[in-house]
Image (tube, rainbow, N blue to C red; front, side, top):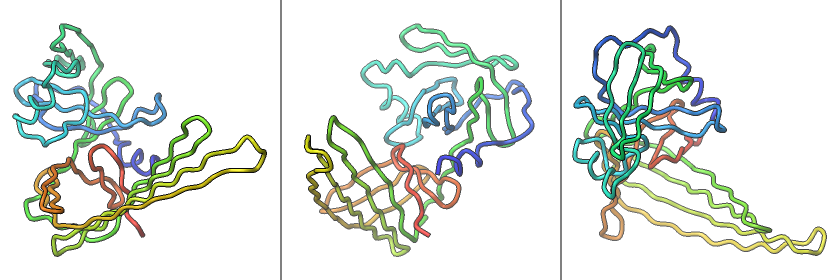
Length: 224
């Protein structure tokens, strides 16, 4: 999956940006840090957020993401191939900067602009997100399965398994639980609205290569 996304980001011929302001959310993978996802949100008025906003990409969403004195919010300026950031806490940061065919490069990190969905978009298919974590002698698995239909309905299922290794060689204890819910959804721009049990939920969403999805920073792979 990581290789698939990385291939979509490996854009060609680089050149310096000449005097244009940026106005988009960019996504990339930091190959020096285990291909960790990287997000940068540039606003045309010179504001910048290092990270993924949680409510959308309107200007008011920027301030929502920066509440509480977030150290990841600030302003930026471009001069040739130099990107200068000044965070609200006064911390400065300098990057080399180049444009690519449809994307940008900051130092060694290649990023591509996040696409938006037109109003009324409906998905149709099944997606899943794996999750595994180790805590001491226990292994937790908790995959999530999402199904979206073209009639505007969705269903979600989560299965959580816990395996605890015993001090006895070869022995372990396994337990599992599952939960399922369903409702309706709408998509506009990068906002996914889910309604279930009478309650609305707002999520960030954008498409990835291979008909995969990024929801709230997690990659959901399309079932083939």
